Length: 328
Image: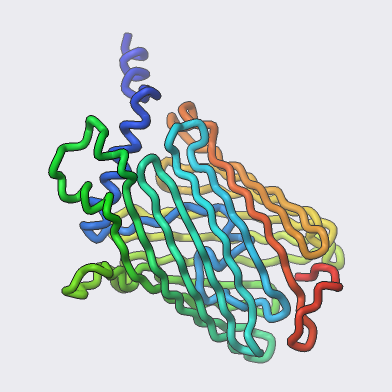
């Protein structure tokens, strides 16, 4: 009897999941109005570091890179988060880098659009590389008109009506990235520095230093004359007034990184384990990861799926060169 009672407490009625996601979507606007921070979850920041740090824009001076990313969060739930992004980053001259990102995310009746432009400066000190970067971005979040017909909606709710009209914000981020010649790297970024509503005539900012920060570090080991690489790393994420989360990663490359595999253990938010596989053929790269949640939540979801397709254009003497094979 006691076991059944405990089980009943953990069961989520899947028929009510759409209503639950509706409440989450609506509550997201309330959170946004109360100056909290929300960022999409990515597992592929290991292959596209521009997702978490603007200082990595153009950090690889030999390559221009295009990334297309698709993520299906909590697969199996109707209205679960789905995100799509297209990004570019590449060098300009010897010490400048440029990055661009177009991102959209759908959660039930909630849709978010983001356009981001990143610019970075890189300094070479002997064989050590140091980069600093800034990004500016425009965000638009809105609720579908269909929420006005939902039985959970109270007519005249100003927050929901503002959400249907759409909330537009301007934001900025700062990052730094250091890469040592022996393969060790460190990165730090602070998103949401401004968070200004574009239609707020007061111009009051809801962002600020240390509201949200990310720190990552790792080391790249090369074995057997560069045919095998192993890269353990860590990512720490902290949002003010929320518990910190931490990713413990290990990524391995085989046959000069023609084959890639990886494993991530995510601490916080109940925990999760992510598995990464990838392959590279000339200038084309493909990555897939599967996230399995820890605890009771996993029985209601078939996990999360993420796919990244990347294309790399090599340049020689400052010009594009598509004829060469891929190199790191």
